[in-house]
Image (cartoon, rainbow, N blue to C red):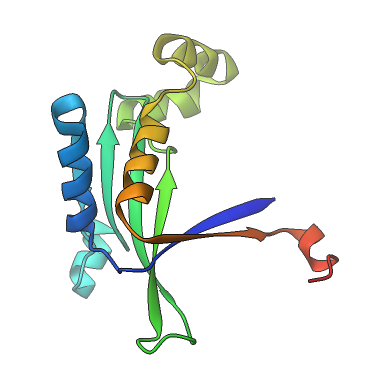
Length: 149
């Protein structure tokens, strides 16, 4: 399995990313921001370890852009910013229905909302085109242990 990591060279904030997405897409979609909790109580109650923005088309088609600070021993600051993209979130009620109804229910949900949507590529392209980003692809899994580098 291959995993692609998007390393942000300029270290943008979630506010920078949110502004660019909203400027490019306007009122076409709705947006929901989530900020990382800074206090211990906030981390326990809020549970959001990273800053993110969710671009919402409907209950099924949602795309999350997540900003994460990772350790980098080669840099002066010791950290670098990565941008992660995910389409794995559903509206709360639809997520419950998706899990509980089974295979037939999933087929019905996909028939109603459609399987693929241009929102995913649209948001990803906006972010990767407007920020300096290095794209690195890594082999993961057991097979990567036996490959020579």
